[in-house]
Length: 429
Ligand SMILES: [Zn+2]
Image (cartoon, rainbow, N blue to C red):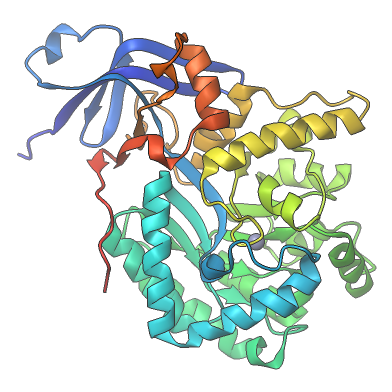
């Protein structure tokens, strides 16, 4: 019989069971059995007295971060071309960079640096777009498998309205996607393939239809972009005038919650579109740094939360520059205050606990029982040493507030996924 592996960690435990409250245990314990949380305690229960304790002293132990939206091939472009809008940015800056991923040596180099970055900032699980390239997508899946971080990785599909060098043959795009699904589905608890049409303007009806069928056939999850930009919205309306909203086009093709689905941005989502997301359980993914950089607009994230749409958060590199979700979390709080102001305070701003919740448990729920320390959750965790109290006295809640607004990857001391302490990825493959 296999022996159980039990670990006990001591520190200031912080997590959000619900969006409205932090659970904080000062000098608390979290007990982990075979990678899953048994529970959190203020003292060690009798049955576990014999287990050695890893004591993190005055540090915090909190759930690690789940990035719901990043484009791996755009990692080199962070901070570039951010003085233009979405469509110009795609054609002048992003598509030329993505074309380079037909070269696997180039791709490997970028992915190596990306994976080290994800580890460093504590994004232990991510939803990752690649390019149209099948081989580079497989390479990225293999590198995630090698380094121990969690991810859904999607080969991007696009067969219209792109430069010739990125326009796929429709049949080939579907065949390549199916090959990846067949090869990688079910081979790992941490790393999975996902279907990733770029967005409606770059996919023909035939491609969307084929991808919907693959999603159904393989029960594969889906991620894409939704209602991000005014120019994009006009283009979509001109392509599909008969549909009531953008989301209903994905829905028609079986790509909107028929299998687990995440839609990024949702800035211009109508009430109807939000209701369709709620009904179908489609995740809304908030990318406030990207939305500010590209001047796309401000997502009313609180509206989605209030209406019961599942919500996560993403860095959206390279529309977003910083892969740290600590930065993105503080932007989400700031943007929600502007949204509140411009709604004449009809909409409340995000609460601090809500921002933390969507960054941990909200997005984490897409990956499974992830992002909390309730019983049965995977022990995905960060150990945080905040430096601010060197000079002044703060209580624990004040320290959490400061970490959200002032913290960085420099504060992260340990990183766990499913109970395993993950070390920095070395150069891989
Ligand atoms: Zn994106």
